[in-house]
Image (cartoon, rainbow, N blue to C red; front, side):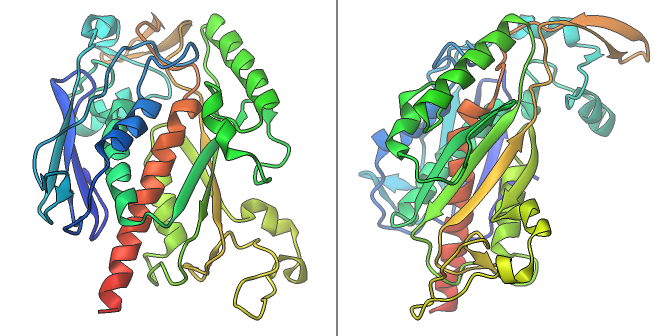
Length: 352
């Protein structure tokens, strides 16, 4: 299953240490002028080596579009693209060729397919997410009125007091950790640096707020908007949880507290529903959180299993993120954009 979406659809290919990664985007309407500089900027936000708290693999992540565009304008045909891999160090992974990293996909992929690309994780690598950022950047051209903003709201035990507060979003790109609270951001950065020195990793949360969403996006019964967003977010490497609206906190509320009372214009006085009711957008802001586990590869000694069924000692090598959440921010935005663009196109077909 290498494809995502119904009408707006992206199919991707490539491995972390192959010649290139890339994809084909279908369903983009004709006549849309693409901002290639802005698309590249989105990739630059995700690429490795951008700060001292992420993996130091040096990839330019320069996207090359191959089809479906003429003079910068979409033709309605399939949009093909590639992103060359320029900085592979495959020998860094020779020590795990027959060894399974604990809590990694190494074991499950080997047992499922009977073969495994150990070089950087192959298809299981988060390098695949660069393709999604391209898809999301193209998708945003279809829905320019919808504003999607993601940011880091926790790193380990360091959390924003109120993840949905009215933060100054212009601060997000001012720090390496992409947290809008600059004081908390510095605490997060220091925590990640400490974890890296220990040869360990740490998890965190990314919060996303989507504004200017039209009423009516989402399809009953099995294509509810929150279900599609959840599927998208749970497809991201290292994600262990998705929560929209009040989520689990709503279980401790009474109905009289949870219900969003209407205003005469159809808006609501509160937004505990997170902008989605009955699986359909209600015009209020959509907000959700995505939980990321610590990266599985540690720069520490661990006891693990090898392909022969022996328990062995291994020590992680190579270039890895001590915490994935700073680079996950544009990925969350991209998948949200692809989901919403798909839903907008589906809704347009209903209105024809």
